[in-house]
Length: 85
Image (cartoon, rainbow, N blue to C red; front, side):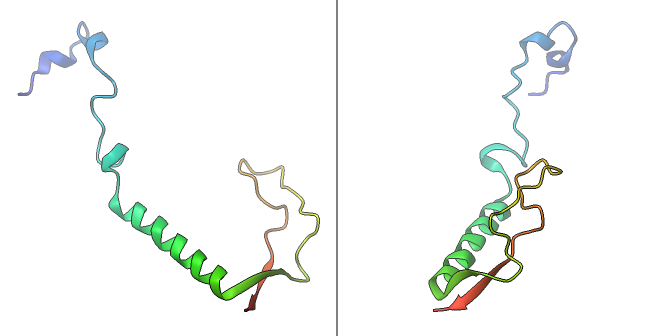
């Protein structure tokens, strides 16, 4: 039952912040995201099953890390080739 007094200024300190988890968060998040992760894992597995990963002429050895990005990434990108097994 909806109780508007539950959200009053006096009662705000009694509200449990983790009681409401909307559709996009928690255990009820988008089922499509789990499917996409599973699909990506399957593609990577199939690639690794059929190909060797080899360096190309653009591959930087040793790899230089970019300091301009928040995430760890290569300065000039990741350049790798695939060689059929």
